[in-house]
Length: 356
Ligand SMILES: [Zn+2]
Ligand SMILES: [Zn+2]
Image 1 (tube, rainbow, N blue to C red):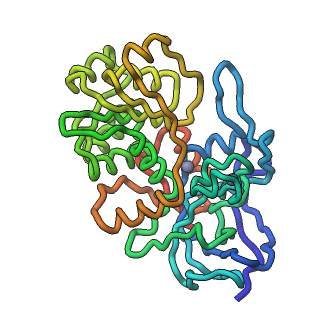
Image 2 (cartoon, helix red, strand yellow):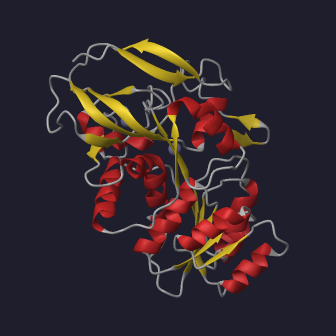
């Protein structure tokens, strides 16, 4: 069977709503694979992609358009689909297989890509759901079979969230120092990625977890998924209260918000020789008194998604051990605009996964 037309939900103006479109698909070539999308997670960064950029602080905005992204854009980078068409050079993949797609493609040829870190490519990013059409569609085309990881016995809706939320959480956790049982880790922001980090930490780390989120339903969910304690960052004296509860022994803080207030809280929470990992893309500027770097011997690092190997490892880990499962909210693809609106207004606990 030939697949000549994809039905996509795309926006044609920055900040505009998504509309149903029909796009011709060229015949499949070389190593390309066509997937019938069965599940696609909605990520918070879709809101920034739709807006056209990120808040860089001081009133400055980054621009996807200046960086070469062209309209229309079909978002969706947490894709699971059934393999329905194979290019003539594809090997190791069979028709009918259910796969999760690694979407963070680079040029494939620069030293960083060749090292396996395509998500950090120094040349031209070709991410599915940003520069290339993503999974808010019935069909999607993947440039090479190596980006496909078989879902196996996993719930496909859950596996879809691994492509961004899952590996972003895993990549950030791997930047933490080795933890012992008396140590605490602070997880700031318990949306889809933060909640995934709570679940992964509770399954793989000796440390105790303190979850920090203003939304009581997210704090409750974090406690159910492995956090020992949970606090509201907006409560009076939050910093003092949390530090006291954790014996002033927070060895690492993962900031899944990436706002000025959340990064300041992360720096305030960690003990000496603590590690702050900034992951969220809310936006703004980071400020800290320079002497604190030395006096507190802090390490502050960023973390952006993770590599193809991390996706393979996460899928393997989930098959081997029962990970605490973050809540999933399955919805039809044609309700994507409502779903994005719910996400923008904080009305989502866990992850929305769309089904075409
Ligand atoms: Zn994402
Ligand atoms: Zn590259």
